[in-house]
Image 1: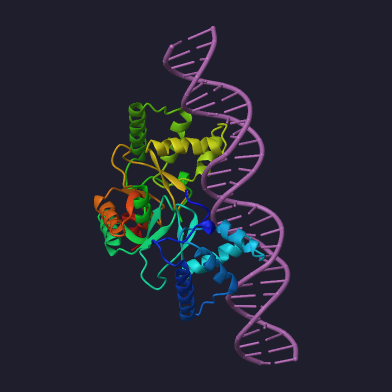
Image 2: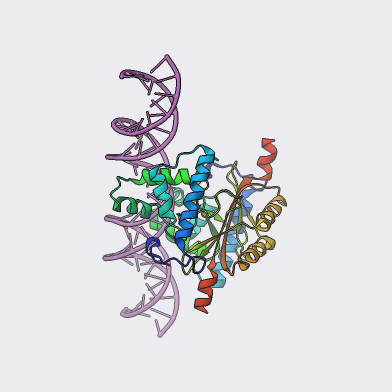
Length: 166
Length: 166
DNA sequence: CGGCGGACTGTTATAGTATACAGTTTGGAT
DNA sequence: ATCCAAACTGTATACTATAACAGTCCGCCG
C-alpha cells in the first residue's frame, strides 16, 4: 500500500505538474456549478482541493483531519456533506473498494465511470471506454437484466509501476 | 429496498426450490474444502448456510445476529473470520457497494466475478461473461495498465422485477 | 428597514462495518 | 501422551457514515 495521500509526490500519469490538474479541476468545478446554479462554497471548494491533492483516493477522515489541521471547525458531517455535494455535481467519485474519494478529471463528460487502481502507487486512472459499458449491458441483457448503474473498479499495476517493478 | 434477507421468500432466479441451491452450495463447499485440505468447521458451515438463506446479500452483522439468536457465542470476529475463510475458498463473494456477502453458485469455476444486483428485490445474479473481462483488459491495456483483479457490480432490475413493474 | 425562508454549517450523539490483540481450546501428528 | 499449529472466543477499539437538531448566513419580498 502507498503512503498517506497527502504525502505523495506528484507523478500520477507520469511526470506532470500536478498544479495544472488542480487548477483545471477547480476551474471545471466553478464552471460546472455556475451552469447548475449550485454554490461552490468555501468548505466545498477546500474539500475539492484536498481531494485533488493527489491522484490517489483519499478517505473522508483524512480530509477531516486536514480541515482540522487548518484550524477549521470540522466534524464528520462537514466532510460528508461536502463530499455528497461534490458527488452530486460529478466533481468527485467514490471508490467502493477503498471507501475513498478521488477527483473526476472530466466532470462534464459522460460517465460509465471505470477506475483503474494501481496497487503499487495507489493512484487512480479514470477510464471512459464505451465498449466496456456495452459489454456489460449485453451480458446483463442476456439474463433479462436492465442495467441502470455500473460500478467498475479494476486493480492492477499502472504503466509507471509496471516499468519500475520489471 | 428489499426486506431483510432472512425474511425473503425464495424466487431468486424465478420460481425454484431454494433448498436445492443450499444443498448444492453445501455439497460444493464440502468437495472444495476436501480438495484444498481446508476445514469446513461447524461455524464456517453454518455461516455459509446463513449466507445462502437467500440470493440476496447479507450483512456481516445480520449473520452475527442470526448466530446469536441460535444461542451461539458469537462476536464480530466470529463472523468475519468465517467470512474470510469462505471468501478465500471462493465459496462466497463480497459486494463492495453493499458491504454484504452472497453465496457463490459455482465455487469451482473461473471468476471474473460480475454481479447484477436488483434494486427492487435485492437479489444478486452472478455473471461470468468473458467478453466483459476482455473489454476491461483491452481498455486498461491501452493505458499501459496491467489488470490483476476486477470488481464489477451492476445495479438495475432483474427480469422478474422488470415484468412486475411494467 | 425588518423579517421571512432556504441553504449552509456546527455540534453532539450514534449507527454500521471491520480489525487488533490476548488468551484458550481443539484436533491431529509424532 | 505430548506437542504443535490452527481455529476459536472475548474484549476492546478503529474506521466509516449518518441522524437529529440548533444556529448562522444571505438574499428577497414586503
